[in-house]
Length: 103
Image (tube, rainbow, N blue to C red; front, side):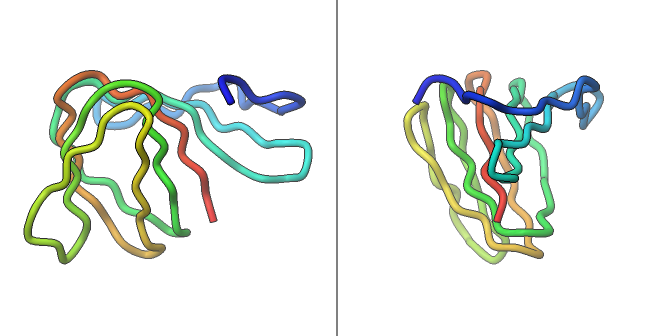
């Protein structure tokens, strides 16, 4: 699916890490929350409250989940799961366009 239909979008962007990550929060008609954004080349650490699925639309990155000893490379068309109350380090090699699915 290349687009979401019937959504509410928060007008103000979420800006993290001095603008290296910018996203918009969206809510689907059924109440499902997601964010859609871009991460510029950088190495960043994110924390999670709820479990997340990070769907990469485009780009390439290396991800190290909390407790892991090695990074895994992901490219556009792939996704990775992050447990709730956890963290992950992401090294963006080529600008990442993503959808974050919560819960």
